[in-house]
Image (tube, rainbow, N blue to C red; front, side, top):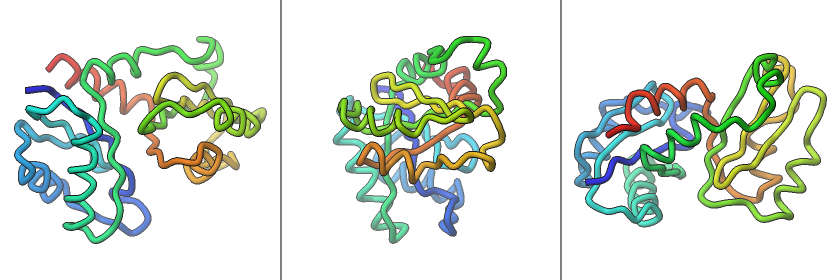
Length: 180
């Protein structure tokens, strides 16, 4: 069995409310073991026999669409991958310490050069970005409400879905689940 962490898009945002026990039940109905949720924002930890992340993502997305009635994108990472994301230092330490918010956007695959250039054109005095593999790190120097950047702007620049998590949340998930 392989430990997976699913970062789900569109769970408990935009009027879509999903109880965590219901979400756990849906994952268990797919045959996954050791299913847990971490805070009510669409973070699901589970064990599966398959190591094929793309296959598992499609399976989860189909189940959630059927059960919830709307599209939910799933972005899977292994425990080791989440630990690497949590430990990665995308910006200078002084900039990271001064930032008000540091977020990670999970993508299904690495963005192409053209998409990265579009994203980098969105840099401002408030917002900075760093792309590393299948993740985009967003550093905000002020409150996010003062920024013009959003997940919608990110998805438009990259031409693909994503889901954002605070780096602190990712670090807590890594601490609790990455070893399993």
